[in-house]
Length: 159
Image (cartoon, rainbow, N blue to C red; front, side):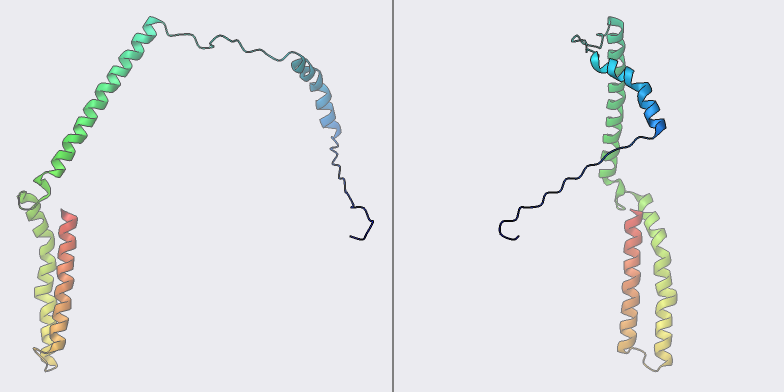
């Protein structure tokens, strides 16, 4: 800014220009708006809600009692279910049906390992003239590890 110069101030004005239809609506509503503004409604200082009569109070107490009983029954049923599931029902050692279910779901995995995967690995090693070699051992180890992991996952999901 140069010495002695005054800062420039800018003033901006926004004007709203109503359409003829808007002016007509405003002219129509203005007397009612002025009347409302001159006499605003007053709020009654007393409570606007009437108190319950005795039959309403009795009905409310009956409804609360009925709901309370139903909630108590529901909570007790949930506690019983929790105790059941936290007990020994989910352990195959104490639940023969669960043990047989897990055994039935894991047996196909073991059968596939013993009847397909290991014989195939051994056959390939024999045809390559490397039966008992380290490659065969690594392949059998990987197949056995995969089968063991699948058995464990299946048993855990079953339990």
